[in-house]
Image (cartoon, rainbow, N blue to C red; front, side, top):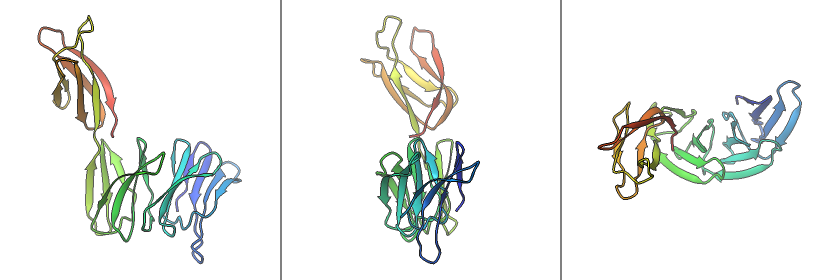
Length: 220
């Protein structure tokens, strides 16, 4: 499996092809000295560990799980039983781990901090490669060459008021795409789902000067 590098350390998932036993290792990138080893992980072939916050996360094709380890100590923090072999690297984005499995042909998303299942989908064949994510879209390919895209929109939420703090009945819109929503006239509150990216968001109300702000919408 390909090692991952972060902050002076290499993280690698190993495998003994004769026994199927494997570990997750943290190694000092400058000296090659082992910092910690999480034994009992199982066959990690094909898994490049994902460093996410204070966790190191990797799958196993013999234990049929995804496991998270403490980045500093290697202590196991959580496991999620997938129920099928995990022999591809996962993707981490905005607190979510996305990966796929063999035999059951599934793609799934886990909470990166707890390992809880967030959603899943069944594809036409085994998932053997890592997912890709860009512009709020998740792309997953299976062994039959079928490529699927999933949209993971974010949202803009807030309150529109006048100079005195009174709520306004206003239109909130994204200048670049034209997507819009009206505020609740009684409270001035709004929520506008939108794909991820950097945008200019405007608030327009009759009799008032249009106000705008530049912000970044995150997926999920």
